[in-house]
Image (tube, rainbow, N blue to C red; front, side, top):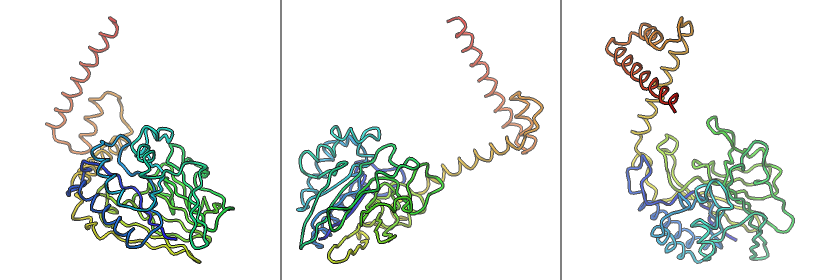
Length: 331
C-alpha cells in the first residue's frame, strides 16, 4: 500500500510579505507536480496534514481552482484541519469553513476525532486516525492528541496538525516533543504546522514524519535554505518512507526578499538598545521625563536638536493628557 503525504499548502490569492514571485501561480505549479507524483507512484491515497487554505473563508473563486485540481487525483484525499482552516482555533467550526464544504462534497475526507479509517490491500490492513488543530493541543503535559493505541490493524498511521518537534525551540511558547509521545502505538505519526519540518525520524521502532510546508511564507534564513518536499510512504512487509523534493520549487533566494525582515530586525535591535540604556541608568534622581531624557542624552552623546525635538513631543503629550483629564472630570 502506498501513500503520498503533504502539509501546509496555505493556498491564498495574495502574496505573503517577502515573496518576490506570484505566490498564487507558484502554489498551483506545486499542486500540479504533486498530482503527477501521486499518479507516477500509483498511490492508494493522498494524506494532507492540515492548513489546506490560508484562511477558513477562502473566496469561492479560489476554492474553485483548488477543486479543479483536487478532482484530478483519482484516489481518496484524507486530511486533518489546521489552525488556518478553522475559526478561532476551534475545530467545532469546521462546518462553517471551506474545508468543511469540500468534505461534505466528497472532494476531501476529513478524519475526525475517534474516527478510524481502514484500508486493506494485499493482506495488509492500514488504519488512519487524525487529530485536528485546537488551541490547547500542545499545552504542557497534554499529549492525548498524539497518542493512539493499535489493536485492530497491521499498520497504524496517525495524522496531527500540531507543534510536534524533535526538540523544543526557544521562541515557541507551546510545543510537544517526540520524546514526550513515545507511548503512542502508531507506527507512523505524520505532523504538520511546523513549516520548517524535521524530515523522517525513526525512534523506538516508530516513524515520526514532517516534510515541512510545501510553501515558504516567511523570509527567515532557514526558509531561504529549505526546499519544499512531500513524503512517499510504502507499506508492504516493511515500512519505507522517503522525502521527495519538489522540482517546481525555486531556490529560496530567488523568491524570498529579506528587506522587510531586516528592517524589522534593525528596529527591534534599536529598541532593545534604548531599553538597555534606560535600564542601565538606574540611578535616576528623578522620575521627571525631562530629567531622565537629559541624563540619557548626556550618557549617549545624543545631539542637542534630537533632545529638543523629544522634549517638544513630551510637552505636547502632557498637554493633550491634561486636557483629556479635564474632560473626564467634567463628564
